[in-house]
Image 1: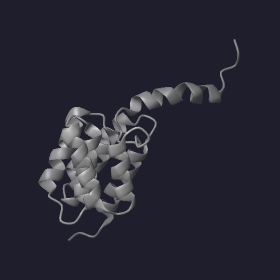
Image 2: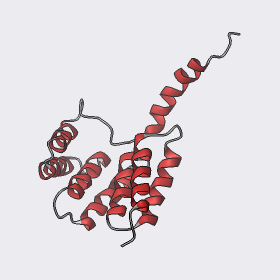
Image 3: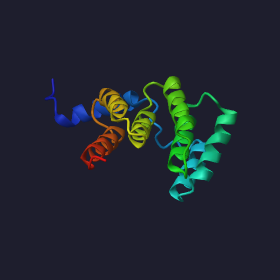
Length: 154
């Protein structure tokens, strides 16, 4: 039998990591015009337009976790966000797809925005379990939690 090399592990692990990713709110823009429209609006800094695109997608596909996640993100990043509505859509995304890494990251950031560090850490812990080999969502939320904890007390 041939010697088992490290590159073989990488070849075997890559498909497993992709399967483990589940719904991650990743780049589905090539096949999804709603996600492409939201991403384009976010890239332009137009969160109102991003929210409209996501809301239109939700009207056609209310069981789409990515659309709920993106709608909540656009609302949260826009001016004067309605945090109750933001949390409602993040929770719906996670109800539809409990392994949605993007929704876990963004709801964690939303909890930090309202001063709820404990709930943000719950989602960080969930991402730690979901991202066996690490993932950008875990890293980003971990940085946000660390920055929140490092800021001076008010």
